[in-house]
Image (cartoon, rainbow over all chains, first blue to last red; front, side, top):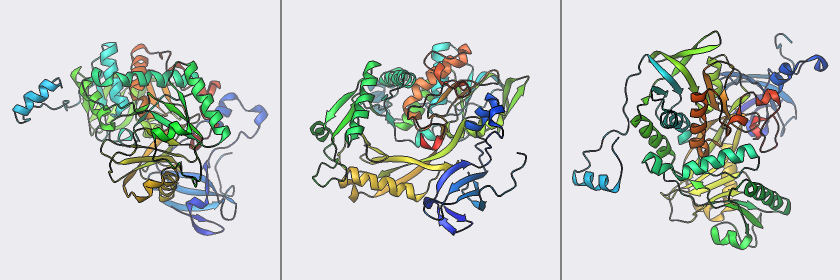
Length: 91
Length: 418
């Protein structure tokens, strides 16, 4: 797999380490979050068979976190942005 | 069911082997069943068998989207062991090894279970201490475990690197004598044949595409062969657990990851135990055909692709040559990947779900093959009784929310690390 790093261009994926599902959000107000919200944040994953937005860390490159759109069934990568910059829907 | 024995072999040899029957029927699905098992791998077929044998429920269909045992049952490295230190895992996997020990006779099918033992090599003091602790923990649970000195390891597996220039000299090893391996296809075929003989309908090329759920209770499954109603539905779909559970509206503490394995060309006997190398993520054994089977770590990213990437193959090959320098001359003949349903604590889920009469058997990470008989046995009990057996009660889905994870590796909620 070649991952298009927004800073470095296409690099082999073994330069990166994987950060998992990019859509997981830590409860915004930790002191008010319920056990169910913490459970969902720590443990539950949508785990789709298809398009997936995920975090990668360019460990052996620019050392930046990036957000990659990749299909988990075909491994096709359709784009990447610096992590945290994209519209993520309701927070 | 046609009994397999020396006499039936001789009788059919005289008849030019034209008298053998099909090992199981292929009936069209009925419109309704007492129990529908989704997934015709080892676990699903074992569940159907034990439901029929132990609980007297024979009105069962096993639905398989492809062919029997074509998923992870065929994609693993066939090791069977019970070298776990946490009580929940130790009791469960030891129950599985005990079922394996009687399985060929029970099924009247040779699953080629070979208790050739498994070595875990130790290379430095802290690792040897950890192996001793693991072995002692197992012995407290009544499971066989032996510590081997360097010389004893050399006698058991002389092909390991014992030279003075070894990069990771072996200082000792953990050994489970009753561990071993088995024939991967035979476990699916043996359970299928024995379940079929007890009246279970095995339906291949029938993919589940949805669930009928009303008022929090499952009523049946939509399939590519039409709607099939069922009083109870059990999921045993291994790597595709996340995908199939989503069809029922469930989000699970599971990620799908890839695990690759590979075999070399066949060679003369050189290794007659299972070896897990302590200085790299690498495990191996030699098959009865002579191939060296090798496996390593996860690829490390979410995937349902059933094919991996080359860096992990290189990593496994490098570890193989470090452990066994003589393997460097072998050529890799085939490699493949399976989809692992990695849970957040590295332990499986066998139990009830928030939907009534829908039961879940999944999250096998990469420990599913050895668990096949006990998994089926426990899952059958759970479905028949609508409550878990004491062996699988700790593996309930709600353990994550309650804070009772079973984290054998101590890696935390990171599925790629287990």
